[in-house]
Each structure stands twice: as structure tokens, then as C-alpha cells.
Image 1 (tube, rainbow, N blue to C red):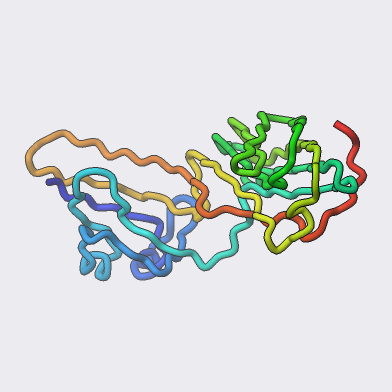
Image 2: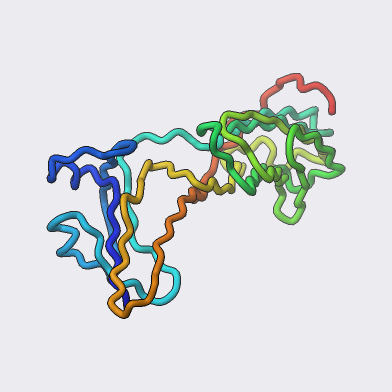
Length: 231
């Protein structure tokens, strides 16, 4: 049952000790909540996160940042409806993070009318697939490098205009992704110490990864006539 001590680039700790961060910058965490294994008195005294971990995987802490963060992957849609006979989508996606990072296993789910048929696609990267049981198109991009922008075109036959004009009921675009070696908050692990009294050799290991949560973007409020070129 080793005891672990974790130090972060916590702004309050640096201010209380009069020190300055050696790399990067400190962050100010709010609404910090710890797993029950953390010794709260130790954190309140010197901002050290000390704990004996339970078995298995667990969430050590959660926190909130009072800062504005721009969407990591920005998606916009242009939609053109041709008098109820067909509908076309132009989807643009831009990675709004630094070029040295890449998002992996990106999935962009674009809702389409339930009675759409005869799909055709053209994607600048990755592949697009129509999933009729979910009434959406899934655009998959295996690796999306920071700073890059790509587009995808989709064309559907449209027997009716069911749900097409009702913007209140139109589902949003949802996005899934993960970015390894990257943190949106800028949090950094300053140290991870393992106090193993039994003599067992234990090695600390830290991995950063950012994953999407409830990540959605609205479809356009109205059907826009953008004179999209044919596929």
C-alpha cells in the first residue's frame, strides 16, 4: 500500500511559497473535488496531494477553470435544400490547437433528415458513412493535425422535407476525439513520488491526454442557399 505524493503547477501553491514555476505557467483551479483516498488536511496545509491509491482505475480529482477556451475542433455546416428533391451539406472542420499536436480517432456526427437516401460523399481527408438508424453521417478522420482545415461534401436524395426546416428539433453536430500529450487547461505534473516502504521497485509514469466530453455544435438555424458546386 504505497503512499503517493503528487505536485501540480498550482497557482495558489506558488503564491503561498513565493516560488515561480520553472516551466510554463501556473493554473488556478476552482471547485476542486478529490477522491476519498486523498488526505485533505495535507492539501489544505501545503497544497500537496497525498494519497494511498485504491485498487484499479479511479478519478483522483476534478476541477474547473474560470478561463475561456476556444473549441479545439471547430465545425461549421452549410446546407442547401433543392425544393424537397435533394439536400447537400458542406462540412468544414478546423483543428484549433498547435501544429505539434494531433487529434486521433476524430468522429464528426452530422444529423440528416430521417428519410434521406442515395448518399454520396466527397471528403478531403478520412471517410464518410451514412448511418440511417441514427439519421446521421459520420465523418471519420484517423489523425487530424493541429492548425489544419478540411472539408467534406454530402449529397442525399430527399423524398420529403421531413424535419428539415424545423430548427428547434434539429439535433446538433457532435464531435468525438482524443489528443495525446496535450492538456487544454495547461495543467502539468511537477512530480509524482512513490513512498514504497516494502522495498518494491515502483516507477512513476505520467501520460497526458485530452478527450471530448459533451462536445456539440449547432446546425445552422436556417437552410442556407450557398450554391454548392455538384459532387
